[in-house]
Length: 142
Image 1 (spheres, one colour):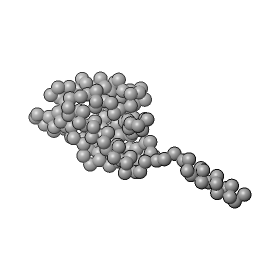
Image 2 (image 1 turned 60 degrees about the vertical axis):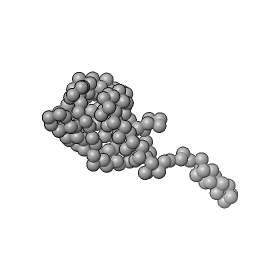
Image 3 (image 1 turned 30 degrees about the vertical axis):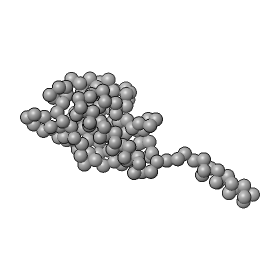
Image 4 (image 1 turned 90 degrees about the horizontal axis):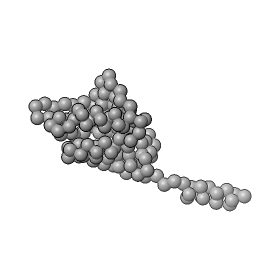
């Protein structure tokens, strides 16, 4: 009986779902954030928006505004930040907090350098892993 229990414990342990190392997960998320800012700076709004969950459940808070849904956020970004209004985006002070191997929240600072001014603020992102890709499901930027 003891042998059977040991064999079952071994099988359960051996067949468990492999998880990535915490550092690997954080590197994946940081890579997504860096790719998103690069897309912005390249003028590739499609590439920038790729990192947001394409869903009506996506939420975006900024100031006293709340947007719901990928389409609304995409429309806002395209109307408000096109051409010279886009500027150069940098993220800094990134702090990635894993909640599981498929969800995390990220704290950080954003900075958009425009020809005549610099806009800056802070953000909190909630990300979920969908398949092999991390997607922002909530963005609170101020």
